[in-house]
Amino acid sequence: MRTVTLKTDAAFFEKLTKFSMELHITKSEFIRRSVSEYEKFIIREKLKAHILEASLKVRKANMNIMKDFDAAVGDGLENV
Image 1: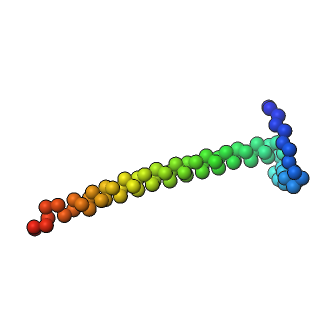
Image 2: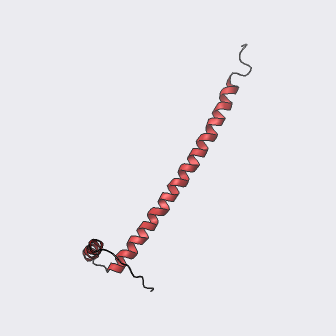
Image 3: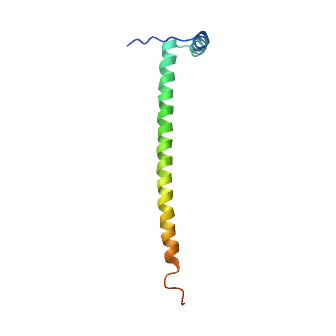
């Protein structure tokens, strides 16, 4: 394994110590798990943004289709 040095304030160190002791894991393992979970969070947020962007594009395309449909609804039916 590779080594990473982390400088932190006392409050963060106390939280890290507390959580690692409660979970019966090392501080290093707690940090590894935390980074892994944060990575998953970031990936989900990016996916949500892409889905929203795609949804807005589809919404715009559907609005254009609806305009075309609305314009065509009465075609040829005025004299009936």
